[in-house]
Image (cartoon, rainbow, N blue to C red; front, side, top):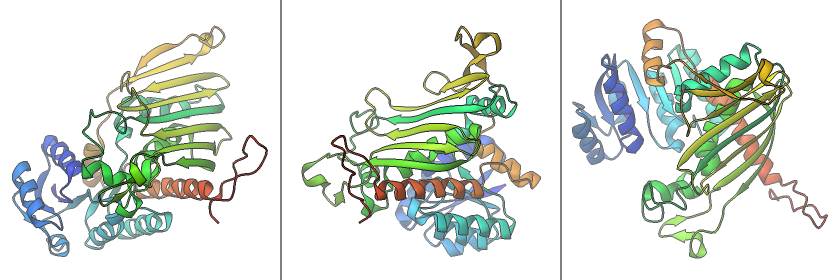
Amino acid sequence: MRLAIIGAGGMAGEHAKRFHALGDVEIVAVCDLDGDKARVFAETHGIPEACSDLAAMLARDDIDAVSNVTPDGVHRATSLAAIAAGKHILCEKPLATNAADADEMAAAAHEAGVINMVNLSYRDAPAIQLAHELVADGRLGRVMHVDASYRQSWLVSDAWGRWDQDSQWLWRLSEAHGSKGVLGDVGVHILDFASFPVGDIVEVTCRLKCFDKAPDNRIGEYRLDANDSALMQVEFAGGALGTVQATRWATGHHNSLALSVHGDRGALRVDLDAARDQVQVCLGKDVHPARWTSVTAPPTPSIYRRFVDSIASGINDQPDFARGAALQRVLDACFDSDARGGVLRLDGQAAQDRSA
């Protein structure tokens, strides 16, 4: 399979490495508006052609598929162009920055008949795949309660670099630079992580907060106004209630995803910090003494492998653009919920509607 990469940033490098490692994919081109950046990227990753003209690259008949690793706000335009050119497409998350755009992209991909997937990379963890199977097989009974969290600490730890000095972090804190905050960045991951095993989210209440981080909340050209903590209360299609959270302030956690699912016959826990292939379960005779045991999940193909295999088979694997659009509708509802307020202060007075 012959693949082109759209975008030449840091995450694009991960895509290049992962596709190269498959062995049956040839990366033939990379495109970025910054031609110099594209050329450096091509040299670094052994890609024969670098360009800055997306339309010209997509017009090539020898390119079967594209990996879209552009900034979030550019996903719609670049993906629709690739789909119109008949290219199979793997797009970075979130699929779009609003539900209308995501729905348009999903409809276009379906109409064109191209393989389409969204890089919700934590689906690659064997543990979450096993959790999905356990719930689907009824091992937990009726699911009643769910807890899910995505904890990062790069606002308090320099393990990944200095957020206050590096544009790759600063833009994620600035709405004017296209950021939807922690909710749009990693919230989409934890919402998928929770709902993939349990089922669709049908109701949501959300509170977002942007904490003060610098004088006047500004560093150079970056206005630091995007949310960096998100708390959600959700209801799933099956009736279960859940709490979902995402934050960049979780001191002691570099990049931690965790999920607990409790049913009327059993429960499970997944902690990717502890292990990507272990599911803690409390089932059967262990329910009454509340005893937990560990189950090892079988290996899971990466989304890069599944994307390539989908093109070969013609059968679209998950998560597809329709799934990305469904998650975007939840994200939109979260932003709407936060804007509308509905918070009751402890002095008994309702908080002002923040959408006013």
